[in-house]
Length: 228
Image (cartoon, rainbow, N blue to C red; front, side, top):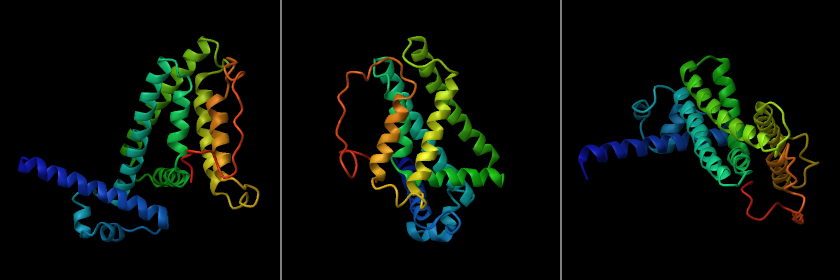
C-alpha cells in the first residue's frame, strides 16, 4: 500500500476512535462533565493529538451530530427508493427506526444541538447541519405529497407529517427517560414499538391495514426490536 494512503487511513481511523470515545463519554457522564483530556485518555493518545483532528470540543460534538444526520440521510434515500417500488411505509420506518433505535443517543444529540445553538458556538456548522436536515424533510415531504395525490394519505400540508414525525420522536425519547412515568410504564420497549407503529401509519386512509392480522403483544417487547 502507498505510504501516503496508509498515513491518511491511520489518520481517519484515529479520528473515528476520537469520535467514538467522545460519544461513549457523553453517554456515560453527560456533556457538562466531558473534557478533551478524558477523550484523549480514552483513546490512549495525547491531548495535543486531539487538536490535530478537531479545533475544539465543540467541533467534535458537531461532527457527531453531522454524522448522525448523514446516517439518517442514507436511510431515507434508500427508503424513498423502496417506496417508489411499492413499499410505501419504508420512509416512515426509516425515520423512526433511525432516531428511536437508541433513545439515549438521540436525547443526548437533542441537548447538544440546543446548547450549541444557544451559545452560538458553531453557527456555520449548525447551518450545514440544518441544510442536511431540511434536505431529509424535503425528501419525505415529496413522498407525503405523492401519497396524498394517490389518495393514500389524508390531505394536509406535507410538512404536517414531517413535523408530526419529529414531535412523536421527541416525545417518545423524553417519555423513555421520564422519571415521572417510570412507575407507570412497565414495558418501555413495547411502548416505543407502539409509538413507532402509530407514526408509520399516521394519516393512512388507504385501508391497507384493514386485512392485516393483529399480532399478539409480547411482554418485554417485540421480538427483533432494536430498543433497549
